[in-house]
Image (cartoon, rainbow, N blue to C red):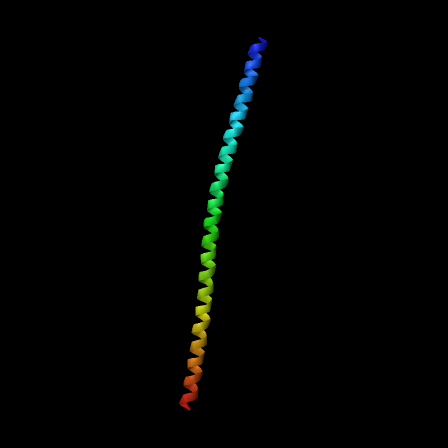
Length: 78
């Protein structure tokens, strides 16, 4: 009876160790996937930020050139 109990306890301990190892492996894989998603998000955000800066610069350039053209044409009409 005592050896059977010892075997059951050993089986439970082995199962617990296996589950812990499996959980740890799954957690590491999940962490790696999350890091990949974060890297992808950071890259996309960086591209969006750069594109936004270009659009703002282009907008100001167009406004400035339109203003200069308007002023120059007004001056030369007189």
